Structure formats: structure tokens, C-alpha cells
Image (cartoon, rainbow, N blue to C red; front, top):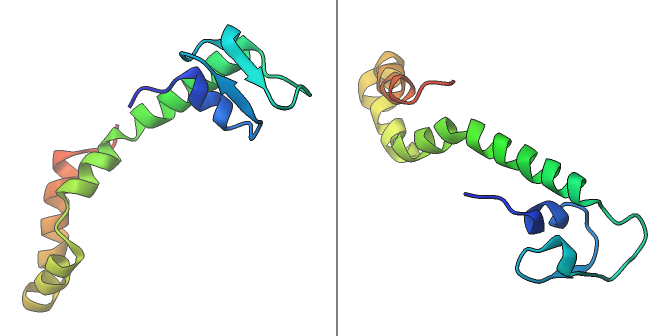
Length: 96
């Protein structure tokens, strides 16, 4: 995912219309405390950094067995078998 100035502006809760993601083309519904371009760029960069830092979480989420399969493994193989299976995914997608 690639964040934009528009995404940053959405976090303000302000009413606005932006054309082509261009800060100079914003029409504000409420003109009180309008965020600066620098604020928008900093917020966008912060959001992007946060998204990028959690890639391993998204990778793990799709790689873990379904909860139904986990329950089946727990019932048939016990807690150690479940831990071993989950560790495979954690090892494949380690925390940074």
C-alpha cells in the first residue's frame, strides 16, 4: 500500500475535496486550522512507515492455519504439536 496526502488529510476529520492528490487543489469545507503541506507529508510518511513495519504481521496472518485447523491440531496432537506448527510460520516470517 502506498499512502498519499489524501490519506493523511482523512485522519484530520475535516471536510475537504482534493483533486489529483494535489495539496494546492484542496477545497476546504472548514477553514479553521488547515494542515500545512509539511504536516501532510510528515503524516503520510509516518503512516507509510507504520504500514511497512507491519508487513511480517500481514504475511503471518495469511500463512497461519485457520482457527479450525488449529483446534483440530490441538485436539489430535496436543499443545506441543500446535506450538510447533505455529512456530513454522513465525520462523518463516520473523519480527524485524
